[in-house]
Image 1 (cartoon, rainbow, N blue to C red):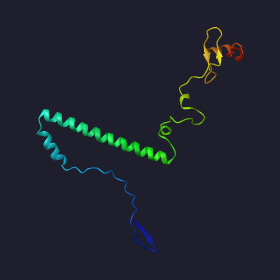
Image 2 (cartoon, helix red, strand yellow):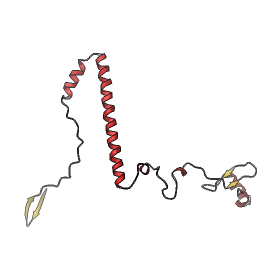
Image 3 (cartoon, one colour):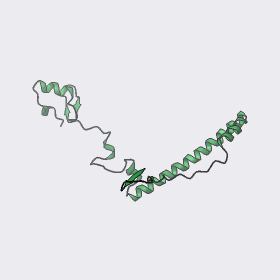
Image 4 (tube, rainbow, N blue to C red):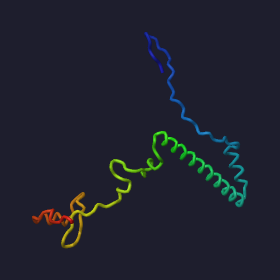
Length: 145
């Protein structure tokens, strides 16, 4: 990158963003080519045992990573004054609604006297009530008591 000052060009070093923190991992003692060479010399029974051991090791590593992540999230939430339940949306009321209200159906506000069909009064009116209103009937006639 060049910068012009008083008619002269000066080289200016570009600023680098800080490198992200790297996760500490064990450095492989054996290269990929060596691993492949070792695996090709194993019998089917030895390969099955290797798969079983490798799967167990992978599960241990994943469990450790999950536990570490959960601990990190809990600590971060605690610094913000939140619980884990708040993070997943199970913690109390938000915006005047409780967590269990989303799937609950509204109580019927209007009832068709002939068929017993109901309408909560929310959203688009039921077909039966629009048909009766088109015939001149009032909505209040069908209010549930």
